[in-house]
Amino acid sequence: MSKEVNKNVENGQNTWHQITLENTDRRSALKTITAGLIAGVGIVSTSCAVFSEDQEKETSQLSWDEFFKKNYKIMSDDERIQTVQRLESLYEKKTGNTINISHQGPLDDVLFGYVFNISKCQGYMDCVNACVEENNQDRDSEMKYISIHQIEKGHGFNFEKAEDEFTNEVPLKNHFYIGTQCFHCENPPCVSVCPTEATWKEKDGIVVVDYDWCIGCRYCSASCPYDGRRFNWGQPHVPEEEVNKNQHYLGNRLRKKGVMEKCTFCIQRARVGQNPSCVDACPTGARKFGNLLDPKSEIRWILENKKVFRLKEDLGTEPKFWYYMD
Amino acid sequence: MIFALVSCTSNQEKEHKYHGNFDKIKALEKDSIEYAVKSTDLIENMPLISVETNEVSFFIPERKSKIKAFKCSECHTKSIPELKSKNLTGKKAHDSIKLNHATIEELTCNSCHPSQNLDHLKSNLNAKIDFNQSYKVCAQCHSSEYKDWLGGAHGKRVKGWVNPRISNTCVDCHNPHSPKFESRFPAKLKSRKMEEIR
Image 1 (cartoon, chains in turn brown, purple):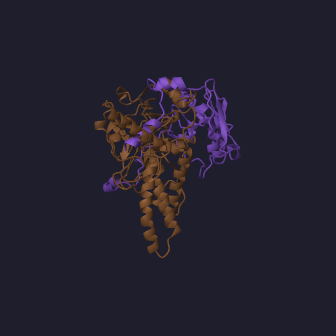
Image 2 (cartoon, helix red, strand yellow):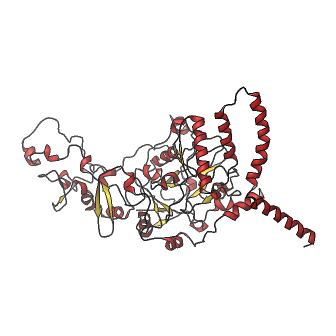
């Protein structure tokens, strides 16, 4: 390497160090620069207006801060509280209704797992309904995290021959039912392919998405072997009276056009000790949820005493979602 | 963009790699875990009955308070054979109950309800079984379901997944007189496809 190049590299490092030492990163630098530009525009617009409305100013300030926030994964606790408060007050200003967005982190000594009894599922689809209502999914495109597949007996798990949009009376004679959703893999391919690190696995095993860092490239969706992810092709719409106001930043808060979303084991419920809404809604008890790290939990009993299997085990994705039979 | 990526990766915690789920579970599992939340906080003073066996102990919802017009002896002052001998006419209180459980050779009303004291259930050997422990009646025939229920493979948790375990008892999901789940149309949000069919 020539001296000149070396010098350049050093210079580059110096600049980088200067930036980091002054505690400035790309985001805040950009923010300061653009803030200056906008301030100019702001002065012009305020001078033109007869009187400026404080409300509007506050809203635009909030949206501004929201736009330039960090990835949730690297935020400090304070920053997380701030963004949650911003989102809450933005929603209130927009609709007049209050929502509660949680930023609760993973509980200690918890690794969530899920088991599904294919002998019990009858295809009633109460889980799908409960999921859509709990997680504020787009009503226009009828987005659903859970698919229930109706498969004729005698052909094994032939998903290509499965009926996913069945409207017949259930259970249909000579058919069985198997549900799929995000399996929260221990080795999730969707996480490794994300170019912006907008999706990651939390300490309690839940694979989450930061909707504000997702750029909508859909690599994750392509890499998922289980069809676990859903994309907002249009502006998602939930009627105001149907919005679940009890939300989590990484869970069921309202999404926007062009971002990926998926099952989060109802993170807003799971982290306060509740079952995901699909588990609570299932009338047959085919769905079980619990802590894999608790040897006395029911899920551990099932894994140790029943015949369990997972889908596409050979891929090495290590889903934390098992199936079993009576 | 490069800066953003650099700052992201540098902040990423190095996670220990396990060879599969079971390695991780074995390495991290704990015998007694204290959760900040308890399932009893989620159920709003629901009265509970404890189930104790050698392997497990957990809670089920109390039953008697949910039975309309319990105690039965408040109406049933006389035993069933005595009532039958009187040839009473008029509407019977339990007319709506149609027994749709096994066959009449295997099960009749008297298999579970004693003819003398109706405030209790009874076992095959005529031992008294409290209505709150009706699972003991079911377990006589459905032994594999009972085993799965104790373990947690059969049945359903009430509210949360946290300790202490609160599970539905048999009759919370199954009508004891007609235990099979009915076939019906799937529950769906008003969907385009359903509208097309109509």
